[in-house]
Length: 80
Figure 1 (spheres, rainbow, N blue to C red):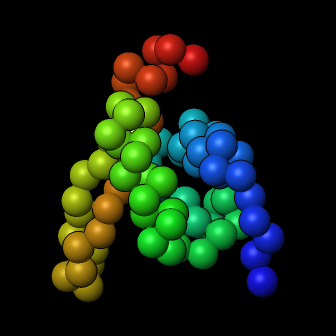
Figure 2: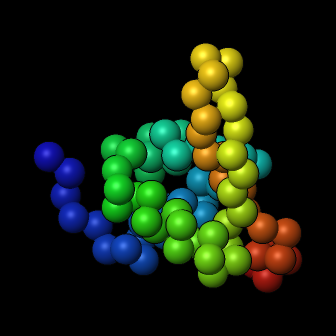
């Protein structure tokens, strides 16, 4: 069972993971921060997009399934 992690720590881990790799899917982000892909994680990612920290684009995988690909925004990279 996963231990509770403060939302601020989750956000920091997401930002750190994306600063190491230019783009990541939801599943890749979940793995990088040692969590499962979940509605809670999706909500956090959506909030970071709204706040202008992340950008998201929809991609189509080789199997025809659509997915989300996240990266840090140029504006956010400039603020660091």
